[in-house]
Length: 501
Image 1 (cartoon, one colour):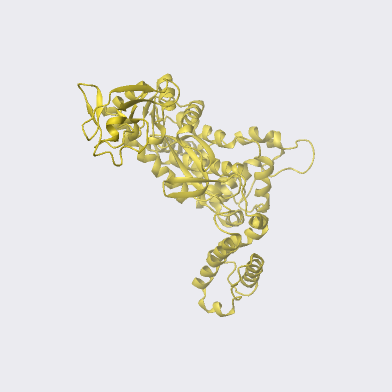
Image 2: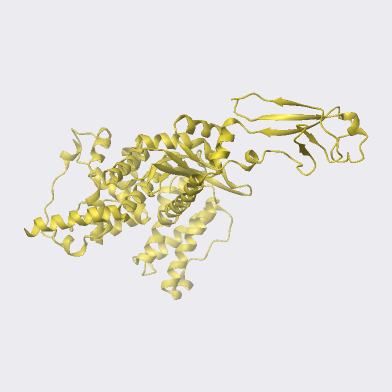
């Protein structure tokens, strides 16, 4: 087994951790909270167990990626920080004097060890099980929504990407030493990609060899990001293509180029399921998958809360069949009907017919469409076309030469009628107020864990990024909840009693 390849390192400096990594340190708490040995079981088939050098402990490699998700740093900077940050070394299971890995090992670990593993569902399942075990999950409701991530490539041209990263590096340098500006390489003014590449290479060389401040963290982080563009991404920049990425729409007049992460989250703000798709996919179509994944993770789902996108007819039928209450408002076109020109055609209740603005009543009606065919039926009302031809108000109402004049009204299905009644209840209105919580979670993923932009190309890369980010936010949430804090405080008190006993 992989774990048998590892050796226990005893260090005379281990006591430093008790001094500099306090009990309430987040990384120490995560170590206490999570049994990471599941990584061995999941990755065993990815390693050769009977020959070759001993591999770097896969738990340590996984924890490096988790640190990236928590602190939003590049491979180079996460490894660099683990050289001197003892909370990092403690979390990684290293002795204070142990050397760190080469940053390139993380790329290999992602590509070779995590490939073909359903990491997204697995990590979400682990945190949900943990929340259930700690008696944190009390509700049986999930809130559903989607958040978008822009593609790493193709948002800008390759030259614009390089310009942006070089600009950030120059800005950091000037903030440290304004006088160095006169010695900096002359900026590229050409539109040619090769000229921009050559300029960036000169800039990197200058800062590393002549600026004297390359090792300052404020400079090294944007410097490493620009270097990483050359070492890892230059071929991608030249190709400027991501075969999986699609254009999605946030609103009628707002589009983005990238991916969507469809989420289900409890009222306690623990994410229970995620589906990552290309950007053009419809939000509502993912509801059934999100609910079934939440159930598979251990949730009992009795209520689903979402916006109007989730109230389509198929979802209403699915919810009814599975005895789930769907707290999602119907599209106004359903509740109000898709009747046009409401001020021009009025319904005569006694006759059961519509009357036009000139006072002419329809002489017959016919129902179009069949039940249970995915679309609502329509009632079509027929007017006497001969009367319309000579009507003084026919402009804009009757088209010259038309052989008929009709007016149609959508008829709500049984499912829609029941949903319309449900959304007027106090229960519906109270539960709908919980939806804001998932908006805040989307914001946390984007602004706290780098989820606004994909860190690699392709759906597989986005799924890995999503898995680590969601695992991180779920763990942080569990640590914040008062139920867990009570349990953790008791555990600490008990361990201290044993120590001093």
